[in-house]
Image 1 (spheres, one colour):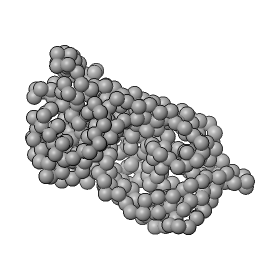
Image 2: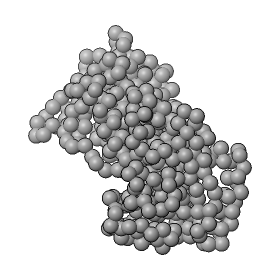
Image 3: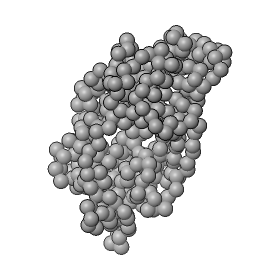
Amino acid sequence: MGLFMAALLLQEGHRIAVLERHVEASRQTRAIGIHPPALAALHTVGAARTLASSGVRITQGAAYSGGRKVADLDFARPSAEYPFILSVPQYLTTQCLEGKVLDLDPDALRRGVRVEDVMVEDDGGGLRLRGKEGGSVVEFRSRFVVAADGVHSTVRTGMGLEPRLRTYPDYYVMGDYRDNTMYGDDAVLFLEPGGIVESFPLPAGVRRWVVRLGAPCREPTPHLIASLIRKRTGNAVDAGSNSMVSAFGVTSRRVSRMVHGRVALVGDAAHEISPIGGQGMNLGWLDAAALAPIIGKALRTATCSPDVKELVEFERARRRAAKKAIWQASVNMALGRPLPPSILRARNAVIGRAVNLPVFSELVARRFTMH
């Protein structure tokens, strides 16, 4: 989010500093799904085409249960411009956005800087940031601060803001394996009595698998995840081809205010969303896309004062979007929880019939693609 926000402002001629606490860029795949509204936003900094050429375009999906297809899902219908969900490893997305920032200003990105304090100056509303770079204390002065520093936001904590926290009874293990299935570029959901298994294509012949559990997995291994996949879905994956494993529980957080004077929180710093459904990263980009014009407009005025009404509307709209995303993620997780076989069959039959209705099918497609 920070890199995207920086690119938006840099291309308008503003001076920006991106303070990144990590010295080296991550090579983790992590979040992979970019939805059509986010692709449209990324297009404004020239990133959408580059990313689309690096990823897999998912235009459709399918739901199975007990080896039988329950429903087809069409992700192409809601968007004429980007009729797909793009699957691309997060490190490639970060590399693309970092490249856009450095092309605009080679000195904009400061790695290895950890922000510790944000203080209001007495000179008419400026800000002073204090942090550490290596073993030294560093200071920066700014008219605005946009905190895109994640779930455990240092800026948010330093301002004494406690987001509303909710925990869920859902735990997952996740792994990336060589794709030896026949699903091609489709997303696949397996609605099974033991809980859902999700599967998504990645570039270079890799497929991600996500398995729902009822308790935390302390030591996820490629073989454990492969065993769970085979037991629930019948698909045999090669444990030796694994390139990533992860285990996680689910919480959601949402702050009561995103804007505090000249400090704004975006992305996970403002609202943490369940990874199930892949909305969190996209939500953060859309936060930045909505905020950048307001800050850019203020920076072009003599007083550098943002329009209060525009900030209020920004906050109202983005908090509403976050609330909607949290609700959608909750529905997705509920659909993936274990059910007795008889109840599961009945529910799947209802889903299968409903998806054949054009109105319901359109609604499902729009929900999955964040329209």
